[in-house]
Length: 406
Image (cartoon, rainbow, N blue to C red; front, side):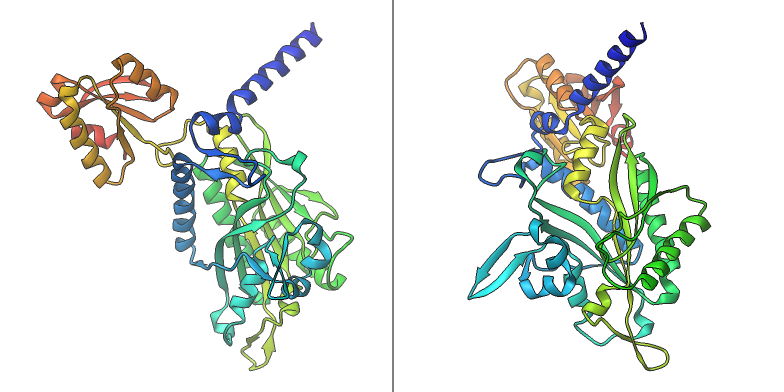
């Protein structure tokens, strides 16, 4: 009996996961596609771009409020840069290379060296710190073809990166602020999460003393916040220890997304300096930080988490307007015009199809709202509202229907 129960339970979980598979939903909802012309490099369809832009707009809003400055760095830079950063020694097997004018270049696998160059473009004072640079940076990493998986495992992806240049006395305060931002942004999607502290790996860069100092700083912040965490010994980045965040989706599955890494090494390698209060030159400390991890992977998780039924603010199409007959088209398009002016994403289904078919198609597309327009709606300057999962809400004035969107 127990074996039969376990088999049925496992089959139920597998069935739920299949229904939520982001590759299946990505095709059905026309979000993204893959092509053998660019393996592991996703193509975003119009609906997918709307979804991605909504996510990135939210990211930008939160970072503006947290006093980050957005930057953009080139995707291809000279090989010497990657030798300086240490990526050449630790990461070259996963990198792509090119040669132009007898000069060797590499597509960036990470964004951090570009941030170092921006920091170094002018003289800095201790009064400027902390400096918080944020970048939605496109990176390329070679993954084996057999490991590629939709948006979850790709070769070209955008990291929601940030690099904070801080003084030693600012480390713990800034990390605490980062953890506040991560909590705020995960809560927006209803994600619970678990935390893991990863320490010095075997192929570490720099001195053990600096590593011990960095690990203590991360431990202090977690303990002061009373944040439970597990220790993952030896799994830090080659340049510093890190705090990793594992979000839990609606099926209870765990996904590693966010990371906070403390780095004493790279500022020295790039000779990043600021003039201290004592008029001497000092190296800043860098906090590397990502929240989504990568836009692609986070989108895959969101697609499966919501089963494609996105909240209104993320939905590629928010309102489908369904005129019952051709006589209702003028009013339907006027409604769309007003919604568009107010910033909503609305479409009119003006196809010559049966009305019941249009209703089913709107439901199949998982659109949050369908607004039905017939003779009475035109006469009353109203709409009949159908809400996803709740069904028919009846006829409402245009103003009342708008209030449901707020």
